[in-house]
Length: 618
Image (spheres, one colour):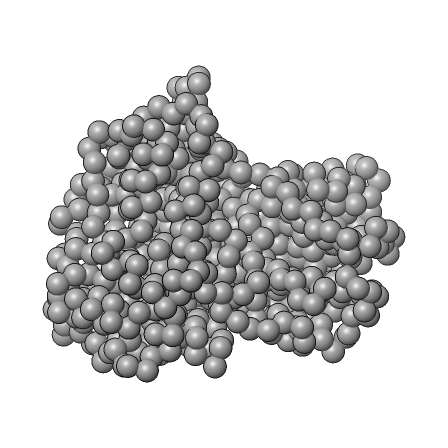
């Protein structure tokens, strides 16, 4: 796990060592164990290293091939690298290190972009081909590792994090106003946009070839959620074996591995399997202050369940309890590391990473289980009666466009109304490959799973990576093992979700307590996974209600944090009013503070944007 950066002057200007060194230094938190740079004419690579596999200097980067014609800067872990190494050795290729980096480098020399089909892991890497004077950039299938790029004055710049660009003399920090529509519609990005002008994300499952003549972009992999034509009889057995293999495969490491243990099924199962391989496995849980004096909403806290599983699995368990003030305290650091805020209240992740990093260098997470196995049944999964594709898109778009009420939407964005709001087009564009297909009721459930894997999951993964790496911690996601993903996308919908004809629509803006109103109806998501998990974790967990990893912000925003919210969002000269309508924001925020509506999602997004302006533009 590392940080990568680099640039290519298309006009032939020589790359400068001082520039690439400064760009690399901005990523030191991603790789505190070492750094290096490589220059060749108009091209420069930088790398910061978090040593996980092969801790020796032989695995340092940027790494130069034996023939001296290829150079790699790589971030990630390849869990099947030993198998690929054996395959390459049979081809007569020799190795100087025991690292997965050298396997990727030699694999690219041998197979070029077809190497990507063979990699089971998380990665973002750049390879310079000196023979052709071009750069190959690639990002893993699911978007576990981030990778950004920009063009500035005939120079192509790339990096694991955008802050690296700040040290390039041609880059100028500016807000992309067009992106505000996307962010405040979805609390996410459904495209390759960011909040920075002319800065884009290389999308998951894509690779680039960059030369001084052109940039070639290709998609090499995509999710395929489909109802199987021929159903198998032993999905339970196959899933059980595949899940165990996925977790075991991600144990490859030369340093200690720990696990997040939220109290839920996904992290519990990963911990259970891992505890068979590690003596006194370290586990980490975040909880919330039960003695808050606001008394406005039940605080979600899974520490008791996490402690139960820690007892059962005999782990060395650590907890951190968050209070309302902890959000305020970390906001500046949080936004600095996130760079592009998205998908929900992420500060608990920041503190979880901080806790785990004190005890280990690698942590396993349960991210991905819900997205692959329909773990959020109160979403649109159940609304399987649709007239056609367009009807489905309009209804599902309405669900995701839930931060701002329809009647407020136009006025909310009035300061930037000279820009085009293309949110619906972006939403529909994610599903474009299904538009011309004949769809049946269960296909629409799979469309929902596809869309969330392409958007919501990518946002979660970006948050997980950025906040883990902010503390020099590698985060791994066993549910996104290639074999497990391939199997999960082919499991029939009926084995994931029950009561398909029962439509449950969660109103995020309902001011009341949602637990009793919605969640008692949603313990049937991930049916087959729950069944498998009975082999590993207590019944209190497998039969439990899905609640999610969320802080009690709705309560805190109108309780302990009310002065913070007012200070940031209800002052007349707030920075956000240059781009968003003050009167409408005052109205919506006050509706929350008065208990009329639950606008926690909007308030969190406004707080993040206000902090983003302060951190990056001031």
